[in-house]
Every structure is written in C-alpha cells, then in structure tokens.
Length: 412
Image (cartoon, rainbow, N blue to C red):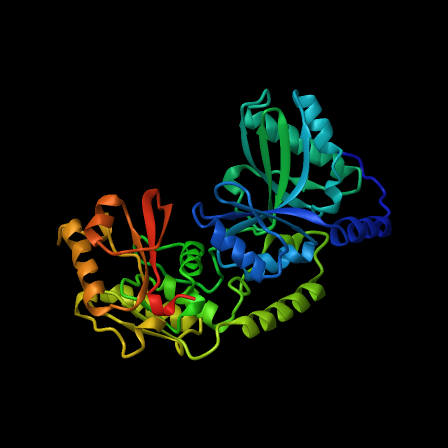
C-alpha cells in the first residue's frame, strides 16, 4: 500500500532528536564471548563506562549517553556487538504487538530510506511465529515513519548485507517484547585492517578477551608459538600501543539521524589520546612463530599491514625447537592456542602432542606466566601444567578451557 506524503516540521524533529536521543541517558547491551564477561566488564570500566553489569552468559549492560556507546564501539577489543535498548512492553496478540511497537518514535532513530532487517527470537510466549512478528514489526515501523515523512525498506535475508542495513533485534519471551537497535553493524571482531586468515583462526574479540583475562598489562613480552594468522599478536600490539581496537572501521550508528560527524571525530581523537596515555609503560615486544611457513608469512603480512612491525617479530619455527628470548621470565606472558583435531593432522597423537607442550613449558619457560587454550579435560591432564584460573568457553563449537598461570614474581 502506498502511504501518502506527510509534511514534516524538520526543525521540530531535529530538536526532538537532540533532546531525546543525544541529550538523554539510554540503556545498552554489549554482546561478549560467554565465559569472558568479567574481562569485558573491566575493559568497559577502563573506557570510562560507569557501573557496567554482567547480564548473564555473554552479556554486559550499561547506561549512559549516546556518545558513551560510541566510545565502547570504538575502543573495545572484547565486545562483539553493542545494542541500544529501545522499548519493552507486554503483548498477548499481534494487533497489540503492532500497536505498541508503532507507538515508539522510530523517526528519531532510523534514517530516511533505512534498510531494516530483523533478528528475532521468540519462545515461551503466545507470540511465537517469527515470520508473523517480522511482518507486523515492518508494518508498525513503516506506518510510524510515514507519519513523519520517512520511508524504510525491509529486504529479505538474502539481501540483508546490502549497504545501509540497520538491524532491529526483537526478543519475545513470556509475552514480553523488547526491541533493540544494532549500533555496530558488522561484528566488531572485524577490525577494519584487511586481515588474511589461515585455518581455524581465533576471532579477534576472543583473542583480546584471553589477553585481558590473562592481565596482559603486567607483562613486557608476549610470546605466541602457534601464531597462525597472528591474531594474538595483533591484539597485543593494539593494547601495548594504546590504539582503539576499532578505530579503522565504520559502524551502523553512523547512519542514524542522531549521528554528528564532528562530535564523533572529536570523541575519537580524545579516546585515542586517553588510551595512549593509559597504555602499559615501558618497552614491549611480541614474538610469534608457527611451524607452518605459510601461516608465519600470513602473520607477518597482517602485522605489517596493521603497522605493528616495530613491536612484533615472526619466525617460521617449531615451538619444540625454540628457545625463549633472553629476558626476565617474570615479565613474559606465553599465550597459546595449540592445534588440535584437523589443525593437527595425522602426524602425531594429540595427547602426546599436548604432553610435549607441557614438558617444553616446564623445562624452558620456568618462571614465565602463561594463558593456554586447551580443548577438553583429557588434553588438560596431558598438558599437566598448574593454573590458578580456568575459564570454560566454546571456540568454533568446540568446548575449551583457558588455563591461566601467573608466576609468583609477576603477581601483583
């Protein structure tokens, strides 16, 4: 149905955006890797967010002005996505759902001609049909926008990745509906520096979460002997240099009516200055290696492309033939995501392989701290290394644990 043109007082609409979006406090939800909520919460505190709260598995909630959420999107290394909470209401029928959703001021949040897609989860509710929910939500939003001279399109999922996409998250449970707006766009592990990948890479957000959980700021040297594409090194270099993790990429909120480019540039400059001043003091070094020469070459390329070459060295070498750098072991953090399953191949029994890793660490890296990813209790026992902290999580659908050990002399 073609909706009629409606004359709009643009100045009044701009004032409402200024007062109710830019000038008001909002609630936000940060999606994090389950198991690393505490590390993400601490990172948000360092970014200046007051009282971030763990909200169950995989989530952090916080409140603040819109610009606070810009800071999180720019600066976080651990968060996968940031959502802005919009409205929550009770509905037991689709008519009531559409009516209450249409009462929300979408014209303050969606730009004219926005391409709106829905991410819907529904269960334990009378409103359980996701297709019908999407249909009614699209109708409600279109009618509300039309009243303010705005239009929106609602592409099919096959077209959901088109430029200008804006995702509306709808969660319906026990007859309560909550709508949120995606601020990030593409998931935040996509840092924007064109990284090449090898087999089974860690996502950047997970690698950064591991480093924060292991208190990387205590150490001057990071060693990654199974570096793959160099993800640990890239994230460690950003932390050591005080560089905001996502400063080189775009965000969905940059297409909102409330976005102010000049304010965003100023905030970005201020955040870069703050993070550089807060970066760990002293000289730092990152040593990477991989027994696969192709992987080592990829890591070297990625580090050079990201401008990290002064901090990092990459060697195509087997961990079992490496010697640790001449440095105080108390200042060394060994981070490892050893191969397993298909990554290991048929050359060696995986249990024996992890046993050899444990022996190598005990023999050559005594006094160093470490953070090692281990897939399963059997391999954890084969590794045989002491640890004070164990974080359970999933990586690529595989159950894993992060084992963290801080040497006595480096513990603060």
